[in-house]
Amino acid sequence: MADSRIQSRNRAAILEAGLEIFSRHGFRGATLDQIAAEAGLSKPNLLYYFASKEAIHRTLLLGLMDTWLDPIRRIDPQGEPLAELLAYVSRKMALTRQYPRESRLFANEILQGAPHIADTLSAELKTLVDALADQMQAWIDAGRLAPVDPHHTIISIWALTQHYADFDVQVRAVLDSDDPLDRAEAHVTQLFQRLLQPVD
Amino acid sequence: MADSRIQSRNRAAILEAGLEIFSRHGFRGATLDQIAAEAGLSKPNLLYYFASKEAIHRTLLLGLMDTWLDPIRRIDPQGEPLAELLAYVSRKMALTRQYPRESRLFANEILQGAPHIADTLSAELKTLVDALADQMQAWIDAGRLAPVDPHHTIISIWALTQHYADFDVQVRAVLDSDDPLDRAEAHVTQLFQRLLQPVD
DNA sequence: GTCTATAGGCAGATAGAC
DNA sequence: GTCTATCTGCCTATAGAC
Image 1 (cartoon, each protein chain N blue to C red):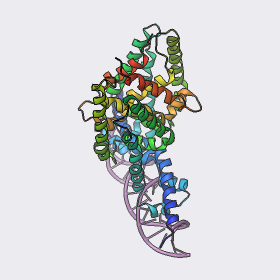
Image 2: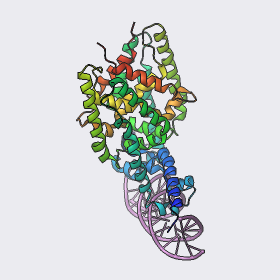
Image 3: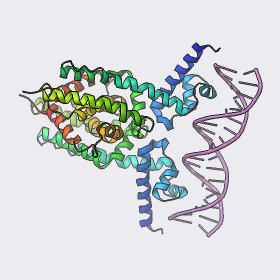
Image 4: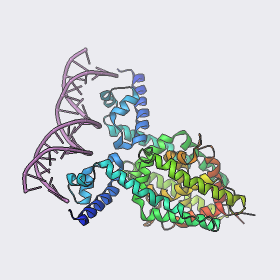
């Protein structure tokens, strides 16, 4: 029986390398040579652990979806509306900061028309979003949240937070700051606070 | 001398086809075969008009930058601050509606690290953005605009408007509306109105 | 489990006839 | 100007030795 520690170490190294390369060059732009070099393995050895280039990519995307959907699941319907939504924004911003490569991998996939995850989007994601939108509408009806379009507000949260990871190059070109994210969170929080705060 | 009408018609057809294919599959994901088929020409004939695959791509990107920067140039420093900025948002939204493929072509390029347009970003774009940011800061100091971070506000405008073109698949999956954009503009306008409106 | 060597296919670009 | 045929290189994946 094979040493499973070596197996899991190599599998992890391949996925780490795949994340690095796929997120930088997209699926077609990435090559197994690059991934193998990044992982410190030979190309055939890569294919000993994963059946194909697409298998590596698929494994990464599937593993990613859970991390990506988690922040929305942690919104508490019993909590204070504005605080819950701002905490959600904050969690999404933390993902952007901690996992920019994952964000770009995801962005690449969506840009290409989401060929591998279209099902997950229109099933799992849509279910979560519709539930949150219903919750927000209830809060709005109760006067605890400003009257906004719930669906488009959720989309706005994604757009603003992920933009800092996906369009990092452009953000840096315009800001010329060492850490473009340091003032980003304060700005995004302010933006949603003003949008969502109920006015009587 | 050759019939220049044929020349310009074919060049236009190639660029149109290139826009369609490059925006859907990215630079590496696109093939000359696909572009040729889309343009109704043979592959060698494509290369009679453009020296290489990259020449088509470069021509598209360069032509795009002007259209993309135009809305920011049309902001009037003499105008009413909030109205000027909301009009800018509206122009960006119009670009998203009219030129979603151009937006995705641009997004693909940025996502890959902007290898072909990094210079333009850090020169021309940055100059325009810094000028607008200065203008906004002056408006803020005069109490005619709410105190926001000008640079991050500009980035937010890009993020929100372009998201509807670039992440179209995801937006549609979540909204299941025939025209995802019909309520988008009202939402985005409301969002920036609340962010930017000065409160005394 | 890991390697070298290579098969097999595809894509960008060119040659040369018409 | 446009075509068919083809060269060339790269990339995914496999064969087979160790």
